Image (cartoon, rainbow, N blue to C red):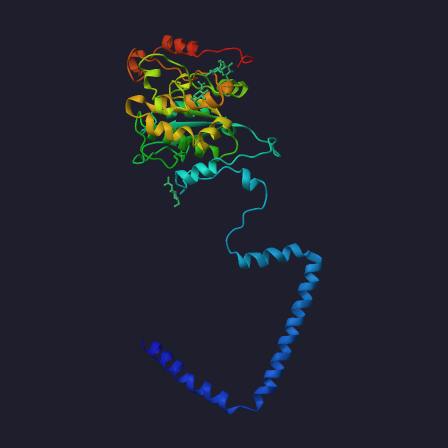
Length: 359
Ligand SMILES: *[C@@H]1O[C@H](CO)[C@@H](O)[C@H](O)[C@H]1NC(C)=O
Ligand SMILES: *[C@@H]1O[C@H](CO)[C@@H](O)[C@H](O)[C@H]1NC(C)=O
Ligand SMILES: *[C@@H]1O[C@H](CO)[C@@H](O)[C@H](O)[C@H]1NC(C)=O
Ligand SMILES: *[C@@H]1O[C@H](CO)[C@@H](O)[C@H](O)[C@H]1NC(C)=O
């Protein structure tokens, strides 16, 4: 305590002697100042000489980053192509839908890539919460790291707890509530597509649910999808109440009755068609306004829009095998009682396998 007080006192005292000396010594100061200035000048010229000498030998590049790093203390991104083609390191971002879709609609106009691009399949899981089949998918993905990406859209209230070893770890995208049969469900799908577009290596986009399991191994799926000229989305013209019956005449002239299509929700689409979906401003408002509740917009919007714009690119069938019970709005869910060797043989064969040259 005492020494502290003492120091404080001497500091206070120090003020006065200092002002006194500067006032008193008017004559010796200029000489000292002159000497000091001379010394300073000498030091500066030595420094200048040295730095010039150094820069000649070390080349000026070495000096430039030092100057830059003083102006911009943040870590500088390398100014290479790598910066533009690297996928985002985190899937979480703060863009809202308008910002995200705008960003996702960027398309290069030169079709040849000036780098080696390995096209990937984006597996997009539209789920409510947990992914009970995740361990099975992990086995499916194992060893194919460069050929796929994963995106999960779930209820915003759901917080996943995948182990870091899982392919699903950190694959959640910013999500919103998506309700069955409503446009918010298509919005969830569009959000998945837009997020997946941000990775320029994603070439094919597969929509899945938490109930889906892989029926073939990864190499077969990759070959099947990458060798096909077509995108796989179920799209057909169905007469009757549950097909054309859901058409609303106010959709004309954008959509005529003959152009109205139906199909199940699960698809595999090429990058071109996905950009078409994300940038759509023509059909989206029509479907949002006129295809509500029992219209089940997720069974019509993409199916109709794509078959109007790009019919020649569609296989009109899905790669997802489902069983629709007669006159029921949901596909059949298989449980413990169904699972035996015969069952897997049956669905494996049902996964139709046409000649790749035709598809
Ligand atoms: C996103 O944010 C921008 C800027 O704040 C705003 O103009 C736009 O309406 C927002 N879009 C949505 C869908 O919230
Ligand atoms: C994938 O399945 C096919 C057919 O069942 C098989 O021939 C192939 O070896 C499998 N590939 C891998 C990597 O397991
Ligand atoms: C759809 O309707 C518009 C306007 O009535 C018409 O011009 C167009 O030819 C129709 N298209 C088809 C495929 O029927
Ligand atoms: C899919 O349907 C469209 C009409 O909606 C047709 O033009 C196209 O050829 C069909 N695709 C195949 C592979 O048959």
